[in-house]
Image 1 (cartoon, rainbow, N blue to C red):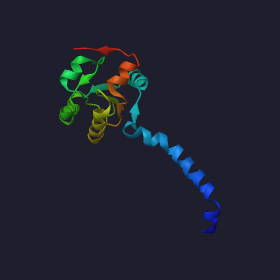
Image 2: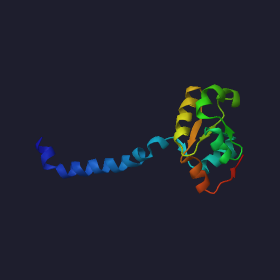
Image 3: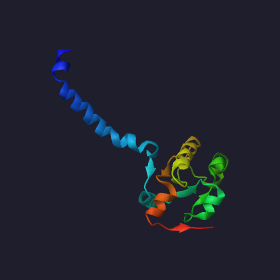
Image 4: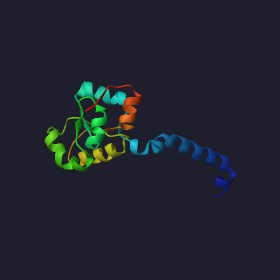
Length: 136
């Protein structure tokens, strides 16, 4: 115990260092396992990833990733297998902000899809990266 009391500053520094090392992991929170818009484009181009937009139909019509397939989150479990038959195909889940797409990743993983990832920041991040948006 005397060692701890005599060296309290070293322990304080160690705890502060650990907190700084863990901060990026903690701050990402729900984004863990997510993709940036540019990473999503690379995955689409290199590995022929399928983009699944889990927004409601009206949101989808207002603007979506070019070539995205619309399956609202409430219907994802029932319709994903019919839309993407090969479970080793990479999936990029997209919604308006990235929250619903994180849930969609969980559903796709539960259904056996090997590589389902969420677009961090959703369509907002996609537009911010000045990537093409399709309407209708």
